[in-house]
Every structure is written in structure tokens, then in C-alpha cells.
Amino acid sequence: MAERSCFICKTKREKQDLIRIIIDNNGLALFDLMQKIPQRSAYICYNTQCIDKAEKMGREKGLGKFSLQKNENLQRLKIFLENRVKEKIRFLLLSKKTVIGLEETLSFLTDIKGILFADDLSENTLKKLNNKSGDVLKIRLPFLTKEDFGTLVNKSELGVLGVKEPLVELEKICLFYENLFSQEH
Ligand SMILES: [Zn+2]
Image 1: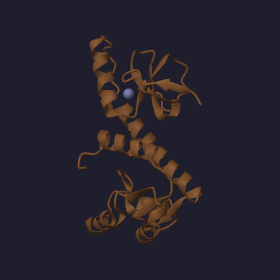
Image 2: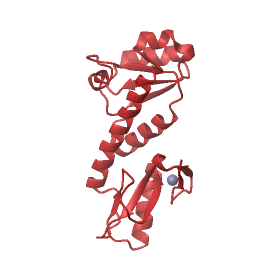
Image 3: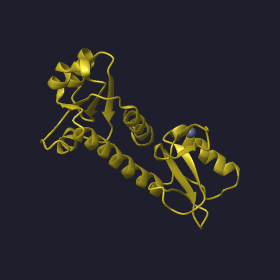
């Protein structure tokens, strides 16, 4: 697996755990999300801090058109991240390392390493989940309603999914997504 460093914070990661940035022929900074455009490039973390710093650096170095946070870039990034999260959930479901539903998740708690829950999970259910699941990592899926979440498991809706493996990468992506796109959380 190829490793690269974030050009801002210098952290080394697998290439696909970083976002590739290119400067196109018009001098515009673009996210190359598929990491395939043959251009000189730099890599950056899934982290709003690093992106903000890159933005500032671009301005200071007089890269006048350097703007990662312009709408078109962000819109593409948003869709990309949403697909990435759904892909990862589908992959977990296929690997059979999941437990579907709140009660089921709570009854297999000793095997559960992480819990994913829908963005619109009711306050009461969330309270119950928090009370009974202790310090198991819980991740709100910032753009998946119960209905959306349900379609991934062929049900009309799903609020809670228990997962029997660590969810580090998924947590990072969801956090990044919330930082960039959510106002209310
Ligand atoms: Zn970084």
C-alpha cells in the first residue's frame, strides 16, 4: 500500500486515507477524489483544520485562485464522503460483523466494538443506547436517516447497527463530515 504525508501536518497515512489535491490548468485547487488525474499533487488529511491551514497557506503564497472550500469542491467532497461511508457500511454488512437493531446490539454487547446510529434517532432511543452501552464507541451517521439506513439492510428503517470490529476510519470520516457540513450538531 502506498503511503503519503499530509502536506500540512506531515502525518503519514495510506494514500486512500488522504485527499489528493491538484492545481488545474487555470490555477484552481481541486480535490482529485478518485486520485487519478495526472497532475502534480499534494495530499491532505480528512481534517478541517488541515484544510483551513492549506487555504490560508494558499492565500499567503499568492495562489490567488487557491480555494478548496468553494462550493463545487465541497459539494463533490460531500457526495464522495457519503458514498464512502455507505460503502464501508455495506462492506461491514457483507462481512457479517454486524448486529442489526438496538435490542440485538445491546444483547451482544460484549462482542460489539462500535455502534452506528441514524441521524434522526429519537432522543429516547439515544438515551437508552447511551445508558446501556457504556463506553462502546458510538457514531452518529450525519446524513443517514433511519429510512436511508434501513435501505442498506433491506428494511423500511434502521436506527442502530452494532459492529464487531473497530470503526476508526468510519469515525474519522463522520467527524470530518460533521465538521464541514453540519450546523446543528
Ligand atoms: Zn494533516
